[in-house]
Image 1 (cartoon, rainbow, N blue to C red):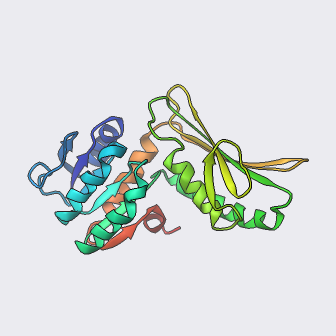
Image 2: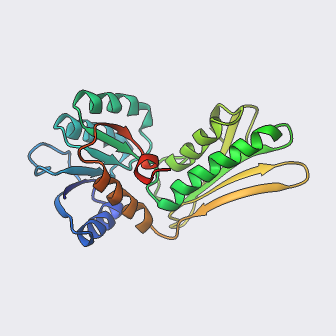
Image 3: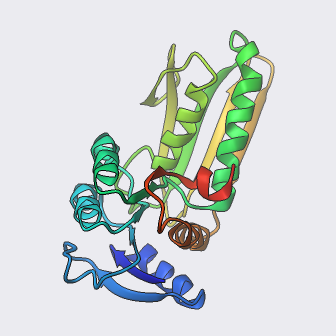
Length: 233
């Protein structure tokens, strides 16, 4: 395939390397605003940029009928508008707060645990924790928000807040230290014990590989998708 990379930071460079190894051609490497001309007619765009420019980047690509795989977090209040644009232009949009295979298995595990714990909500309080490198601009992480949303489906929690859990508001502690690629934990605590599930990323390669796999899957599809569809979870 021909792939355009919009956002060419650390993730973009790793995606470039993995895509090339898998036999794809990277036809654009952009840190500037994408246009029909500088995208160089790709089959798909992979967008890992910054929250403040993600919406306009994606909008431009979709309006040119180019499918987009997006891994930028921190802009999701505008996601419904992007999903509408994808449908209006009869192309595909795929958002992932985290493209790692392990994290997407973790999402499924998290929902199953939330279902089990639903019966014991009087005994256990849920709390989330995420740890990332000091350069990460948004807090909590998009992955943590996805985890929280999975819990909302099977519990009385209906919103999240930075800090401790309170009532129906699920607490997320966001820690920024060193060069940590990403660690996410879900705790269920009672007066007598604690249940914990945890995912730890060792590097960014898993995120990049998942994004390329998503880009291989998306072309030719119309609609809005996530890694759940790509992986058949």
